[in-house]
Length: 144
Image (cartoon, rainbow, N blue to C red):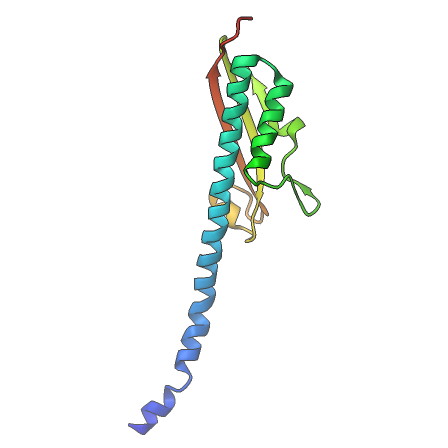
């Protein structure tokens, strides 16, 4: 009986060493997905605000300023290291898909702390960013 007890010495440490990386990966992934979901909500809200402004005022520059204000107000960084995450000139697309409708699309690149995690949402396998897009479609309230 003493042989069995002696043979199990350190087994808890081995089990801990095997399970802990998995637990850390799950916790870190949950945190990163939470940040990505928050960014998606902010980007969708920014698109909605830009489309609402365009539908009422028909001022593309003012709509871009509104979108950028919502992005900044939502706490999303515009730069990460040397990478540009959001550029108001190219990441805001204002279009009129049908007469009487205006659509605003906002593109944002959310940094990921875990390489490869964005691949679960359709990104490239070792991408460092989640590609997020928010779109809003509103009926035009001004007369052409």
